[in-house]
Length: 590
Ligand SMILES: [Zn+2]
Image 1 (cartoon, protein in one colour):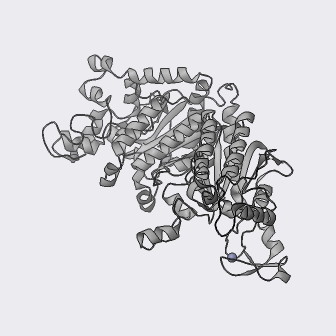
Image 2: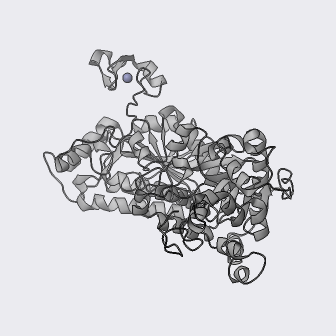
């Protein structure tokens, strides 16, 4: 916001977004967000601290910036003159304010940058102060919240300022090793060395509405490339679409989002001894007579069937969605984030389909891209660091079968998730809620307990794909569905699935609320006994669980050829010829 004239300075401001003349007191009450257009004016560090933390809870760290001019830098002015002027105009020692506070009742260490102070540039003192804030978090066992606003490294301190990117990053690594949550709140602008270190290598990256973040600034990129930049380039919303930030948060919602994240992290660290199973266990595994498996396939694909986001609204509470793979994309076919189940924080990750054609298209029919698998991987690892159990909801026809997905390493992305889940040191409960399609499903289903909804299916390949390869044509899909043994009852018999979750009559789409209740109960009941198992034991048992599908299964009953093949699932290499290299040399169909 621009003040209009010295005389009116205290009274009126002009919005940089819409040029409205705004009564300053009203603007301040609105956290310096324009009530007309929503533009977020920059906040200085003291105002930011006051807005974020609980009243009267902030204590500045005792450390003070020492006066440094390590390389005797002089441009138009000697560097110490610039420092002195910045100190005089801001009333701050340096471009960051650090301390401890409570936020939503949770203790945190906090470092808040101030762009007014030499463009929030990262010099030796700023790096040192943020590092000390991180060390304080480590000593106190609290999360660290960083609010960034910076043009980049401080040129006047030469390569020593470049080194601060590493200094602060390794302090964050220490918190990561200790399982302490780190969150950055990216505010406008965050560029260069700050963007390429602690603004983006924290566990969770929130971008305030209107913030811009990038390594190189737009002017530099335009000069180098000579090309026009895309609409909204480097804005928070652009970064969200490209998988760079977990969420875009308007200023008035920042405290609430941070509080939810801090609450989840705190619960992970202070996990109480498991309560007795909080709700009655689900009905015993359904031994109901099942109809034709092809009918089950059709039911599992019913467009009215509850999706992962539906279950997050109903069976879980307080879902805070985390986005992006941090590499370049946010796959809409996979959703995930922190939520509560029976009051206990968990990380939920699931495939997302939709109920209408438009929703299905927008979600790529629940077929994850490599970015989706990498988002899932990031969230699984975050859950393990924060000691949160993982609940996965599997509902996918399979991983995305496309050229781009292959170019971006679909196979390796699935493989990495299977590996990561095999050694993840936190409880994992997977539920196949609809279609469990081949490797794309398994990438979320290497779990301590694998549950399956009564009318879900789980298979190495779709019946159509199987029919097209092994039968004369895909019209034999109903026969293939029967042969594949893809229903819950079959998979319980084979030991692939541990428990069936009953559905209301005629199926989950008929009464989504009851379906959610049954799913919530089953997950809670299966999770409870896992919470007290030491992580090493969990991992050992999980590996034993999946070890049992090897030679013994192939050598003896139960299970004929089809079952034996079904025990070696992957997205293209299940039964001979599921994709790629058909046994009989016919072209690929899967
Ligand atoms: Zn405005």
